[in-house]
Image (tube, rainbow, N blue to C red; front, side):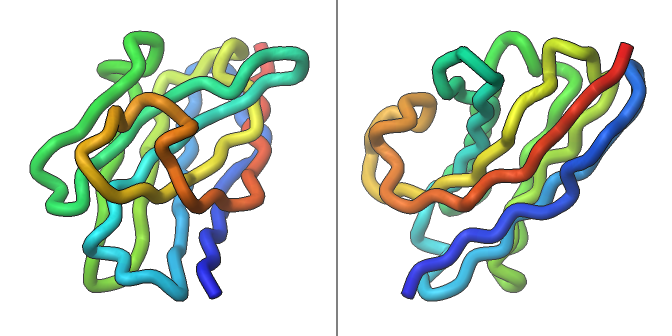
Length: 124
C-alpha cells in the first residue's frame, strides 16, 4: 500500500521559515519523481516544486523561486521542502505527490499518489 505522509507544517510569522518533509512507503521511492503542491481556500491546487527521481533536476514555481528548496534522500525515502522568507500568500495546505514517466512535473494530474497534506499558515 502506497503512503505519502507530510509533516512539518504549522504557524509562522512572515519572514520566517518552515521545513516540510514527506515520507514515502509502499513504493520504490527512487524510481518516482516527487512534487510539492499547495492549495489555499477557494483556489486551485498549484505547483510549488518538483524533483526528478535522480535528484539531478528540480523545478520551482516562479512565486517560490529563490525562497524554497526541494531535496530528496532516496536512502530514507523522503523528500523535503525548505521554505524561507515566508509570506502570507504562502498560506495553504501543502501536499507531496509522486509520479513516474517523462511527463510534465508541474501539472498535478500527472501525479499518481498524494499525501493527506499539511497546513502552513503565515501570519503578517
